[in-house]
Every structure is written in structure tokens, then in C-alpha cells.
Image 1 (cartoon, rainbow, N blue to C red):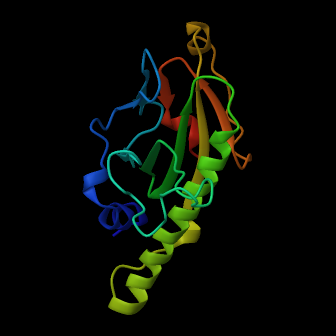
Image 2 (tube, rainbow, N blue to C red):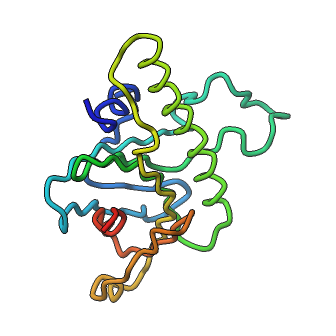
Length: 184
């Protein structure tokens, strides 16, 4: 069992995105931001897309959500994309934004904290219940701000993603090329 398989077995299937190939952000928008996941450029890619809707259900039920709760307590990114490529597991935390926003980074860091909890849970299951061994140091985590670009010209030029960044801003005209975010 790979780290990809273990993570997908831990996360509740209730949170699987409606489409595994399209990310849509509709909150407060007249026209939704729609991004298609492009798996070309690498062979043998497998992915699972999760969307943790904070409005639809109480995703973090043990946190206070009433007035007086600490600001940002229940923040989370729009999507979690778990990818397996060449037996490596990638967790991509994706926050979709149209314009300038300082909130994206905060949401991504909050989501990273949650994923570290999921990693710790996988390690605990192995230790306490002899389940499959999970190597969290082998999982590559990417925090990505997926900004909408209204010009299709961005799709005609290939621009390199700096994978050394702790937080990756990426402009897209409706395409999210997974291969750009994998180790080369």
C-alpha cells in the first residue's frame, strides 16, 4: 500500500469533489472560476480530488464556529489534490482566487496543519494497529494559490513553477497542469 492509498483510505469519501477533473469556485462570484485538471506531461498519474466545503457541513466539528471564536480558526483551502506519480505521493493544497488576496496564504497554512494531522494519524494507525507503514517524509506537500488569469495568452507560453517556494502562486486560464508541480 502506497502513501497515496493510505491517505485516500483515511479521508472520508463524502468529501470527494463532484468532478475529479474540474475545480470550480463559486463563492461570491457572478461567473464561477472553473479550472480543468490536466494530467498530460507525465505517464502513470493517479489523482484524487477532495473539496472540504466549510459551508455545507461542519467539517471541523470540534472547533468553535460561533461569535467569539478566534479569527481564522476554521479556514481551509478550496481543494486538496492527492497525486501519485512514479510511486511518489504529492499533496497539493489549492486555493482558488480571482484577484489580489492575502487570505490565500493563511488558508493554505491552515490546511497544511490539517494535513499534518492526517499524516500523524496514518503513522499512529501503523504503530497502534499494524496497518500499512506510512512514510510522511516521502510525501511532497505543495501549497498553491491558483489565480485566475483572464487572458488566454498565458496558455500559449509555458512558464516554470518554482518548486522551491513554500507557497506557489500560479496563474491559470482554466487549466491546472499537474506535471508542472511534480519533481522533474
